[in-house]
Length: 536
Image 1 (cartoon, rainbow, N blue to C red):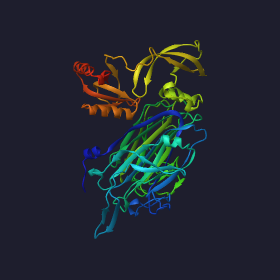
Image 2 (cartoon, helix red, strand yellow):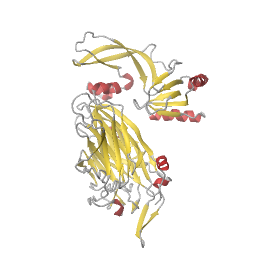
Image 3 (cartoon, rainbow, N blue to C red):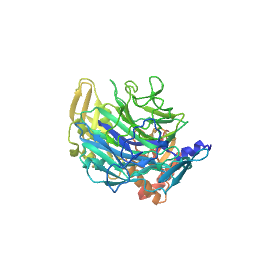
Image 4 (cartoon, helix red, strand yellow):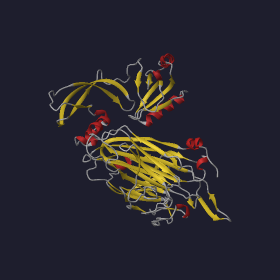
C-alpha cells in the first residue's frame, strides 16, 4: 500500500473557503440529481448496493440528440417570492477516463481505463422547463487531473452563476435540467460517481431576516477530520432560531459506515454528531438526495440510491445554535471510508437591524417596494439607531460613509435624517438622504496616515495596499493589470465583510514601507496606495 504524505495531499486539494454571502428576508432552495446509473432512464432503488459493483452508464432523460447525459429536478418557489437573489449551479464527477472496465484475475480484480479525458469539463448545457438548452461555461473550482493523490478517480468540481438566466425565465415552478456533465462509465476501482446541484437564495418579504453563506473547494475526508467555520453574522437575540445546512459530497457509499457529520455546540462545548430520519449518525453520507429530512423524489430519474453522489439540506435542532451567536462550526469525519466534500451552505435567522446594515438594498423588501424600482446607486443611506423608549427628536445628524461598491472608494458623507419610522418602542429606523460635499469625488484625497485594521487569520504587519474590492471579478481584473505591469500582487480577505485587499508589500519596518509607498505614489497607477497596519 502506497502512503501519500499529508503535505502532498494538502497541496493537491483545494480548501473549502468562503464564496458568497447574502443578508435578506427570504429563504433557500437546493435541487439536484445524479447523472450516472445502471440504466439510462430508470431509477436505481437498490439501497444496499455500492457504486463500485454497478456497470455505470450515463443517465439521459431528455430524448435529445445534442446531449449524452441529462437529468432533471423540480423547482418550486414559495408564494410571495419576489425574485431570485443568487443562483449557483455546481457539477462534479469522477473522471479519470471515458470508460473503465473490470475483469477478475487469479487473485484480484483488474481494472483498465479506456478513452481520453475531455478537457472541457466546465462546459455543459442547461434548460428551464420546455425552453431550449443554453450553453454554460463555468469556473473550475477543482480538477485533479495530473495530481498523484487522485490518480485513480481524478475528480473535478465546476460552478456557474445562473441568477440572471433564471430571473429572465420568470422562474416559478417546473423542471430544471442539466446536461452533458462528464464522468467515467463502466466499473471503476472504488466506484464512479457524478451529479449536479443548484443552490438558490430567493427574496420573500413574508420571511424572517436571514444570513446565507456558501463555501466551496475540494477536500478528501478520511482519517483527518475537515472543519469549517461560518461567521460574519449574529443570530437574533430572542426566541428559537431556525438554521439550515446544505452539503454536497461524492463517494459516500451506502453500505460502508463510520462517516459522520457534526456541529459544534457552544452550550455543551463539544461537537455533536447529527443525523436525520434518512441519515444515520454512523453513516451520514449514504448516496442519497434528501431535503429537510425527507427523500427528495421530485426529479428524473428519482433514484433512492444515487450511487456515490450525496446532496442534502437539513434544519438544525432547536437550541443547537444559541441566541446572539456569531459563529457556527461544522466537522466532517470518516473512519472506515473516504469521501469528498466540495460544497456547503449555512443560513440562520438574524435581526432586521443587522440585515439592513449589511444589505441596505433590503429596504425594498422591508418596505414592500418593488425591487426593480430600486438601484444600488440611488438607495438612500440607512442609519439604524437603538434609542430609548421615548423618542424626543425627529431630526438628527450623523456621520456616515458613502461607498462605491465597484471600487470601495470611501468618501466623507454628512447624513441628514428626514424620516423616522418607529417599529417598536425600542427600535427606530431612520431613513436618510446622504449629502456629499462636492458630490462623490472620483479620486479620494490621498491619506498619509496608517489605517489600523484587525483581520482574523492574517499575519500581523504593515501592508502596502493598492486597492480594495467587494467583488471577486474586480479584484481579479486589478490583479491581472498589476501582473501585466510587472508587479507581484498578493491578497488577503477580511472575513467580517468579504472585502479583498490587494497589496504589493508586507513588512514590520514602518519606515521602509512608508518610503516604498511614497515612491509608488509618484506613478499614476498607485496614487491611492496606502498602508494598512494589520493586527498591529
